[in-house]
Length: 392
Length: 222
Image 1 (cartoon, rainbow over the protein chains, first blue to last red):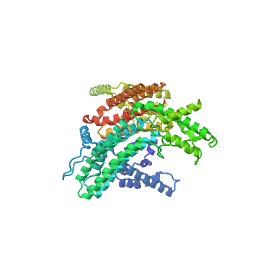
Image 2 (cartoon, rainbow over the protein chains, first blue to last red):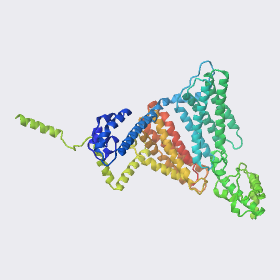
Image 3 (cartoon, helix red, strand yellow):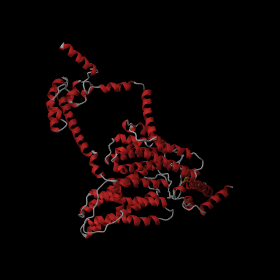
Image 4 (cartoon, chains in turn cyan, yellow):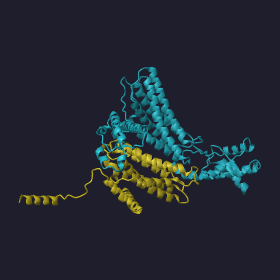
């Protein structure tokens, strides 16, 4: 190949560092296979290069450039070896060697704890099932955020959702594996990853049901599912770990860690992604949303905008009437309170308080605290009516 | 006499196997002359040819049958155009909502590109026989029905008052787009998977189009 490439010359022949000279060195043909062959090839090549090369170059410059070539070639070979070793996708292929009915079986059995006997329970180590469960969980979290009708910067939350799910999977698995290693449990990291991944299917189910069926006031349904579905999944994991560990205190420690991680993560997912209110760094505007069923979405958006307009008007009226001198302009009034729904930025800008330690601000806050988004009844209608009466 | 016979034989042979063509060095820059010829042609012709190829593939996606055209001559122009169109339309105007248009466009772009890459990797790991870019090409082109659904939804959103019936209509349109996209991609990718593992490869594709469909459905600002 070298013979051919350098034979017809042209612009390409200068590209390869081995073909700078017109002399074809057969010793350099095996350079790709071993690094020692490469260095030999170079040391053999340099004398002819110096005869052929530029007479104006000093010896020092030439030694420098050939050393640079040497480093380049060695680095390229190392990089190629590393890429072939780690970038090869075939490393992961054995972990995806599953059949569809296997995956379904394992999903179902992740909710069915087996009785603890003396023999260690069988755990399948594979990555397809856990990965699909995590992607489903991300999709459900995304659906939950969208169906609540909020207008938070979704890009940040999407990335956070991905990071949270994958981070939990990997971090929790590593933590459990470390403790299992300390407690002398007969389990591998792959099996731990697989178990944790399949147990996330309980999170998927619970979050999906609560997103679709959540009521605005109570979390009873969520708590019920949390204990029942989450409990079954975590019980399954605990029985597996207990069957593979010896020693009572070790079993207890491992079981405790697994239960706490699993159940707290479900709590976190439910409460963090349903009520996104003034989380610094994630949400810039004070926005709250309550989970609503999608067919009430459009009506709620209209009601919310009407509410914010009337709240805005009410606030401005109060300020005008109570203390016209204390604020520079009504336009600069700013209210920062988590219970106010402000779908458009104008309402946020227009309801702002300028001074601190101001009796006006306290009055304002009291007024706004009476505007409860969840209860569209007497107080706000009364306020709106009062404002309208004052206008009339 | 022997000479003429040999000559006749040789002429016959020459007629049967004519020696013609260029005597070139194997591996010499033949291809460079071909590339130079397409480089020399006017831009209009190149653009027209590429657009025609993209158009043919769009037609194959809208009317999916078992066809190898998408796989054989894959290109990434179509997926890029569709992705940008999707991102631009899902962006919305910045005056209406609190978040400005920037992150939404980037989000859509990342989801479509990242999702296509992940689904491709998954089908390769399951033992698929098509290459990386062919799969990305097919998945990108099959976003077209969802793009059409998005355009129709935007038209529906132009109505002054959004009622539940209109929401149901939008839901139905997006659902049809989702099913069409999934079936189109299945028609192209079906042969490349082992027979008993088709469901394993189809599920992430469903999830991918489901997420895109959900982003379209939940985009309510006009």
